[in-house]
Image (cartoon, rainbow, N blue to C red):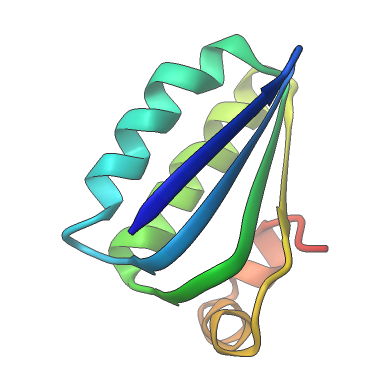
Length: 99
């Protein structure tokens, strides 16, 4: 998985490419732990994300809870059909702000 970060003042965009699964989710979680205290708005770009596992969903939940606790916001953009199906089956479409 490739993680691309774009910071703009208090906003951070993270674009993911590849698979967010058991082997790659710790890397994203570490990036989020380092970056989230610095921002009030997080945007996750899933345009090139091919797959997300339960481990990846756990990292998204961590990010959402972290942003909520600091009165920040988190949005997920450019979600493909396969990822959206996973969000729908797991109920994550009700938890996350998906554009």
